[in-house]
Amino acid sequence: MIRPLHRESHLIDRIGWLRAAVLGANDGIISTASLVVGVAAAATAPSEVLVAGAAGLVAGATSMAAGEYVSVSSQADTEEADLGREQRELTDQPEAELKELTQIYVHRGVEPALARQVAEQMMAKDAIGTHARDELGLSAHIVARPIQAALTSAATFATGAALPLLIAILVPATWIAPAVSAGSLVCLAALGAVGARVGGADIIKPTLRVVFWGAVAMATTAAIGALVGRAV
Image 1 (cartoon, helix red, strand yellow):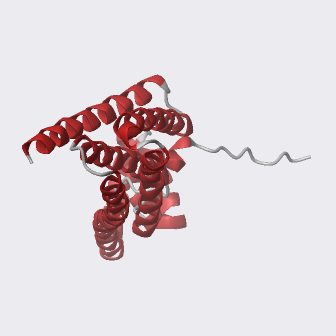
Image 2 (image 1 turned 45 degrees about the vertical axis):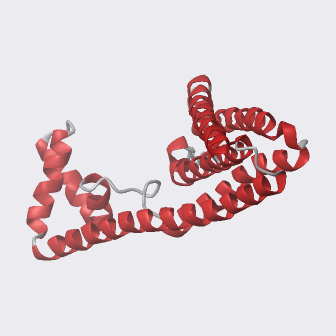
């Protein structure tokens, strides 16, 4: 009886959407919480604090989507240009490309004669795919996906931003700044732990890192808000 092939699931396969998701949610929590805390520290009316927070959510989600789409599209354009050039070289100079691929395998430790055979067989099956992977370093789990990155960032930013905004809505006006700060730090800690867990990394270091920088951001905006509030 032939046993089925073992199919492995690698954590690196998640890097595309995980990066955008963690960045979006993290930025949503920190930026909106900092905005709410800063405006609240300026002794502004609660309604104005909520309006500022809601505006920050919408503007931030839109900005994240646009930024991710533009930046990842630029990466995709570069990848496409490299693949186009590689395809032309394979058409015009197949022997040179075969030698180049052979040398890549030799540098990785394969005996020259065997490296030549491997290169010939790999190119016979999928020449452009082989050169994309082994020469350019492109593979399925890191290839640029602009739309996926944009939608993921926008959705996760909005989700993250909604958390401090919800806290600000639920607590009394005098408690907005401390409640949003404490609640957001808890959310950041949970986000850091979940992101590390999904990515297969150690939980403690990423959690402390995101909580620290979140606290710095909120403390800074609170101080600036208090100074501006006194000045005006």
